[in-house]
Image (cartoon, rainbow, N blue to C red; front, side, top):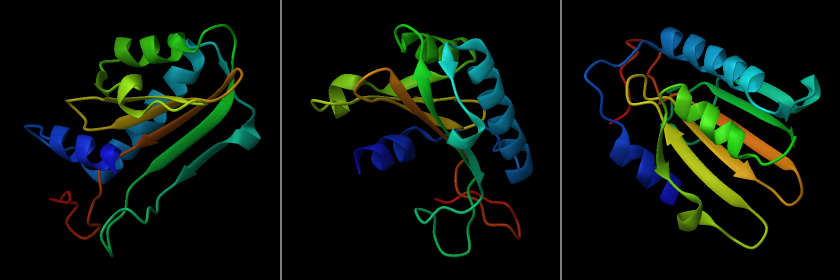
Length: 142
């Protein structure tokens, strides 16, 4: 719930990209992130989806998920996102529990959001999202 509030409060931009632009950028940013970081992801642990139940009925959102092992500290993944123009909007102290650490970053120009979850051991889960779009006119959700 805190994630949704943080993203909704932070999602203001002068121009919203179209759904197709946002989906392409999300995929490109994910590819760049995986190439630049010390995260090893097997193809079986990466998915690309267009449906999300957190959107209103009739709306779509692109989701990209990857899970793998980070060689060394997973901070490299967070730094790679920040180098790509993403700002941290929720930090580990807000969402920490005993077995996970969570960071949420957002690109203010594209409104793309990445959630980085550090699990017990060297495992890292990355979830990238666009905002919700109405396919007919591609306007974003309020």
